[in-house]
Image (cartoon, rainbow, N blue to C red; front, side):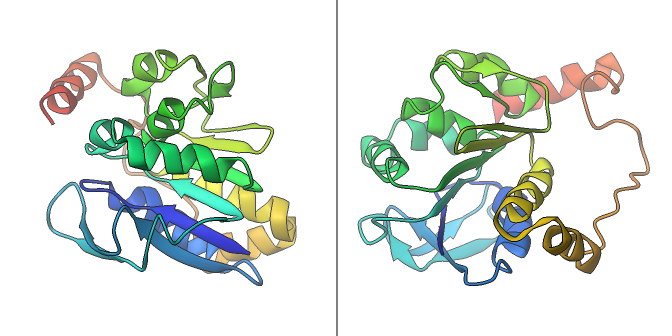
Length: 209
């Protein structure tokens, strides 16, 4: 099973590294990071560089496609070479997936038109501009398209996909192996739970970023 994770300048690391920890362990899987050109790609903080092992021209038929989000999503969604590739490989994927604002790149490729989908809550309007129906669910599966909400939801999305591909017990074993047992110090992980001043603060930060 060929799994391709699309990288682009200023992607968010956890969007793909969380799912990587899970999907790379599916029996028979080969996971590769791909980008417009093979080589180093830098994350949104500028502090981490990940090596794309192949160019998108070399990645012609992934079984699973994963697209992370990040501040570079707008530029990636406007890059016709990237969008055309996503649209093309989607025709033959078994699963096409995204985490956070990676959904906007799927949207730019026309893949989410008329579908329920999720993304980071602050980008709901942008998602709907591509014809998708935003839902606040953490993981949304519609046909062979699976979208995950903001950043950390990529782990949930990948566990969902691992269960589909390899069974619930396998996915549960991976969850146990990575000790994914969230007990956050603050109950502040969604705009419905966070104080309004923090929601507005983050909106401002994201608008600048």
